[in-house]
Image 1 (spheres, rainbow, N blue to C red):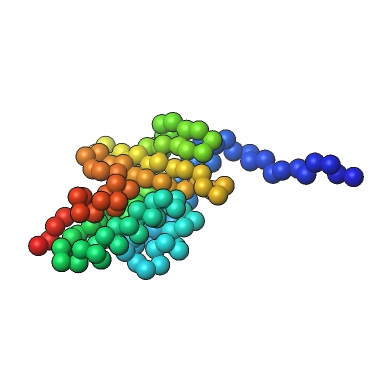
Image 2 (cartoon, helix red, strand yellow):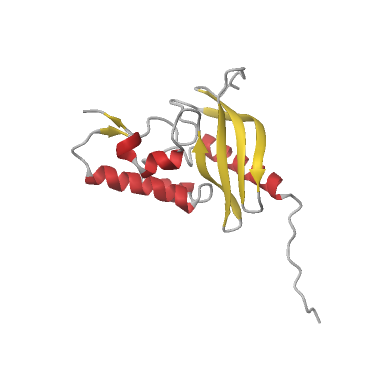
Length: 168
């Protein structure tokens, strides 16, 4: 008689799991599953990769923009994860865990993009971006993005009237 069910044990540490989750997000971005934030299907396609909170900030921004239709705002002109325009390929490198717990991690990575399928060239001026990962429903997902000199991605979408570019 079996008294205790054996539970699956992850062979990876939380840090390794967070990095693997981050790499899943980059792969999803390359597959265009998380890049098109204004698409009606964004919430469904992004759910396996982005936290409920981050997706909620996008939904809130869209609702605010619909309510304020008289104001022409360019909220986010570019890929949701990288901010790049016209990208075909995203490459992350020099990933480093800045801090982590069993359910949250902050990591930095250099991001380069290419507008073709060829491998982008790495350079010393490639931006370092900080990614906040969170374990949600047992899966590591992207919760926020911090780029130097900009509000976090979540803050940007939670307050589109403040951070969007007025077009009128």
